[in-house]
Length: 268
Image 1 (spheres, rainbow, N blue to C red):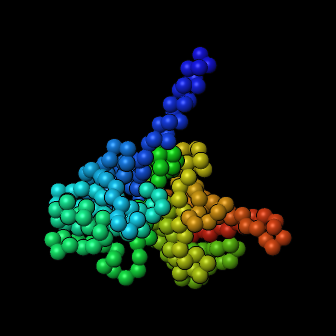
Image 2 (cartoon, rainbow, N blue to C red):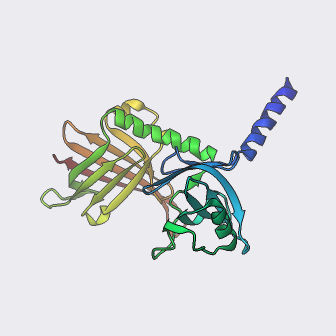
Image 3 (tube, helix red, strand yellow):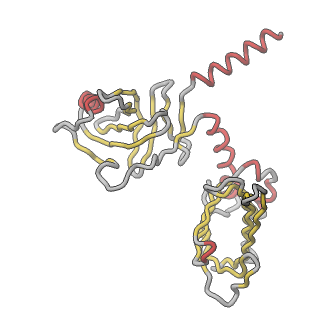
């Protein structure tokens, strides 16, 4: 029995190591699957579903190439297969696409549909691919958005701020909008201390579904460590509250809890 358990654990470990499927965290139904050499991707208004292969250029760069009918995608890998430096969506014969990746030179027979190299700036890795472990966690978090949708809470709400962190704004025109989607809440206002707020739902912070049914949802504050939020919406009473809690460290290396509360009216 003990040997059987060890064998199962070993096989599970091998599968986790061998599996090289990465999911687009923007929409988890899109992916790159290096194990089965297939891809299903969407970028802006462009989609592709087909076989993939990796090609190394004469200059040492590695490209992920997805084959389409006549339009193909080329993604330049960084040091990892799930991180990318640039993209190229191009029309032409597939054999010419392979030559392009190897030589890093655009042939006359190829037509560029779109690429980050056409515009100023640089590609910020729009896809943000995650591995299967991260996929499971994100998928659980996105279920919170499904619950919110079932309760009819998703959408945009115009708000007027009444009070923020102890300061009364009742007589001032401090207004904004709250946007609830399936993965996050975005708040944009003309209040200087709340110009833009982004919170990501976290399943571990929403263990009681009854709270969600009452319009209360919690999560992590985007791009901040040790920072969480709780948003309460009462659509019948047309009021709401945003509470944030952030742990900071002062100059003496002591952790401090920073709590803020914003109350607002939900406008028609």
